[in-house]
Image (cartoon, rainbow, N blue to C red; front, side, top):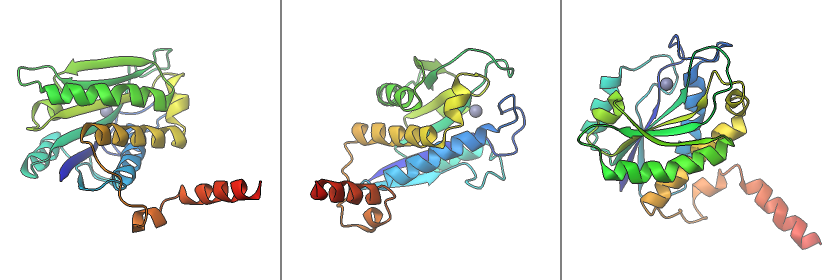
Length: 215
Ligand SMILES: [Zn+2]
């Protein structure tokens, strides 16, 4: 069993974490986390725990988030964020993935970050700014491999186009799930399960088969 912690940073009401037009960061982060959770459910032997408030009402303190992950004895912690530079519109752009910059930096974190980073850059259609190191709480205080993604700048007039696309945010979440699946060699559940019946992509598949037959 692979135990994966999901963290959409902040809360809906967190001031300062927003685009210059007032779109809150948690709103972007949460869409990514929801897509990732849905995608992870397609794999066997995965357990997920979301440590932010999935309703967005509360900005759960970081220490509570990391304590929960440590107590649960998670295998990996993935926090999803979106960047800001000056808070006013500018032309900076791109996607980053962070690992801890301290002594205890885990090579597992770096390996996972290297799988995640190019996939989310591609999903968002934005510049790949690479894997970086930082002394962030969720990277430092977690006892398991941990990464933090910044899937584009909320105050970039380039990146905000991607952030306003629900398709791209979903693709970003799915890209993170795929990277986790590669890293942990996760197997897809059999197509006969309930998950398949509820899969929103099932209908287009049937449609494609129908079209093929009718040619
Ligand atoms: Zn953030």
